[in-house]
Image 1 (cartoon, rainbow, N blue to C red):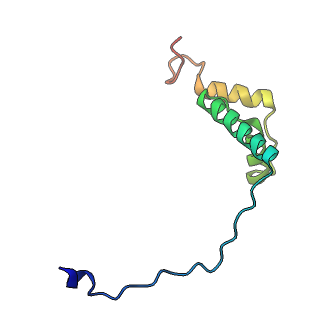
Image 2 (cartoon, one colour; image 1 turned 60 degrees about the vertical axis):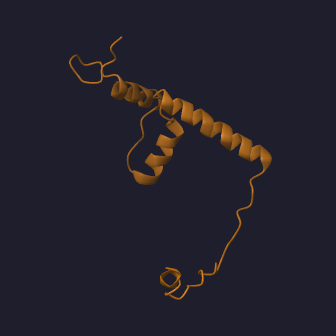
Image 3 (cartoon, rainbow, N blue to C red; image 1 turned 45 degrees about the vertical axis):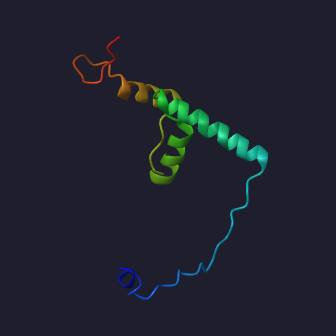
Length: 94
């Protein structure tokens, strides 16, 4: 059995050609980033989308289209989550 294991020549692992360590962010910046990501996670859990992320997406992907106002954006998200039209699937049962 051991002859079968060692029958093929062993290959040397590919050497790492370039490894650039990432500089750790400043402690205050990392705490701010951690806090903002935590807040964003909680908002997404309850169904509130992030308006700033929407604006960044619109600037990058659709520069010719005028983005919705913040109020219209939140109204759109609530309408998508809890449709007010009768008989539509997804309506809040309360």
